[in-house]
Length: 100
Image (cartoon, rainbow, N blue to C red; front, side, top):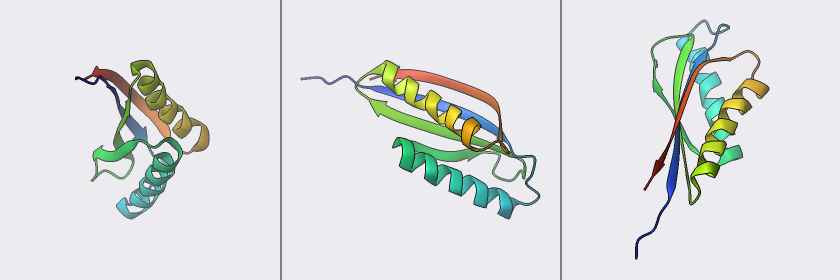
């Protein structure tokens, strides 16, 4: 018996104009990631730009039995960042649905 599921995957690039050190950036990003994990039950991590103070690139994934739902959850994560953190700007967002 084969099972079918979908993975919603997204890449979110952030600009943090108020950050003036890597320590400050790490505190902001770690807090944001924890809140997103708790709120959406997604896997999320900083995947690029770890050494730049004001830029962060996040990878986010969500597994569902429905591709549309998986994509919506990833999109909700992007909107959540924009709505709850006016001090952080989403400068790029790409998403894809993978069917397995």
